[in-house]
Length: 96
Image (cartoon, rainbow, N blue to C red; front, top):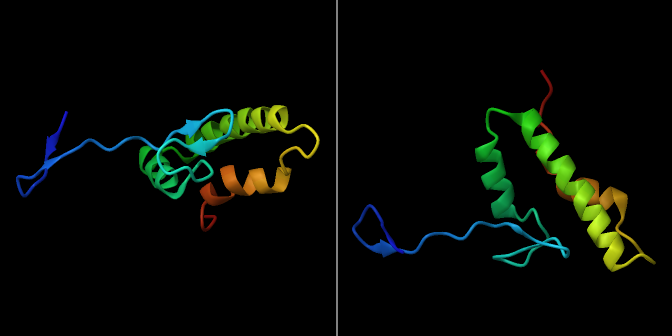
């Protein structure tokens, strides 16, 4: 299915940047999820619900930690790196 751009050109629909589990890589760009595009999309989707975004990302972090540990139990995922990857970017830039 194609869409029409404002200039009349046919465009293809964008694929959502979702995680490929259990690796937790982006299905589109293969970057660690949430990739930059997923982060922008999530910020837009949760623009008026920062708490909801944090809850969603906490659940994803919990599932990713379990999946990644199952894949590599000897080294396991680094908790600080997972926090930065899943939640560190979503914090408000300033507190009121």
